[in-house]
Length: 384
Image (cartoon, rainbow, N blue to C red):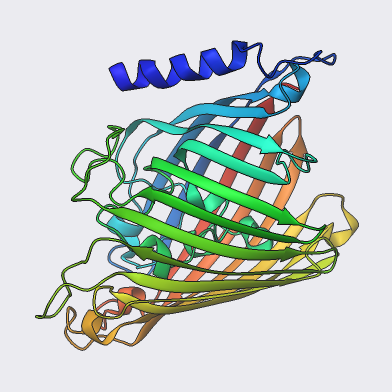
């Protein structure tokens, strides 16, 4: 609690400082935004067991825009969410990639993104030409960040599974975040380079809703670096990550460093037909999954209806040789096929239908291929 009070005290001091204050433009510097999401899932065939699940996630955050308070250098976000923790992939499907991107496995209130950023130079999309961000950070908002693939519900289309599987408690991503810092530099109109350092073991593995604001030498750190090119008809990025502390291998042998690479390519990301390709690798000695490839297409303004979207995507996660030894007769991969349709209902409401077919569920030959159907109702709210 003392550490939390200290962080908020530092933020309050910075916001009130006259050293960097300038004449404030009109409009409130503070805004609120959030979303309530409810998913209904039905595993109609195959998988571990047929059955249904209803998952819910409700989150909100308070944003500060210093440019509206005479402090153009400073921005901040302070938020959290509640999740009902209803299992589906673990209880009914048994897949390795995660059918729903809001599944946490543990009910409770979670402290989420709480950070401040310092920005120098021209502000574009809320970020300066040079930006430094400090606090509790979802690294997936900056590294391997989804754009076109963000429409899909399967977790692999948010952050690739060869990255999300790593670490003593996963990297600093939804739902469990750790302390981190990001430095980003915008080069011209199209290029960005960014580097980040994060707690090597965010949160507490046995207590997922309890936040950990300490940094322990034994946990080490996660280092991430990325280059991004973004233009009207093309978006490219390439990155890599590595943990400072060695990890015990799946098979016998000395501890190994957990490292990996990833990349994305998007064609016509803002057009009628938007395409994406994503891929990644991870150290096969210490990870269940060694490689990943995902691809898909999204049709915007589908059926001549504004903001309606329909998309199809494929996600293939390949097992490492060591990973295959953990399952008798293991398949070499799991493949997910997803078809989804999103339609706005007005007043912040969106309805999204989804069907996923999982081939080689969990790479386990004893589990039949599964077909799941989902329906998502999302309500977004906010103030400017």
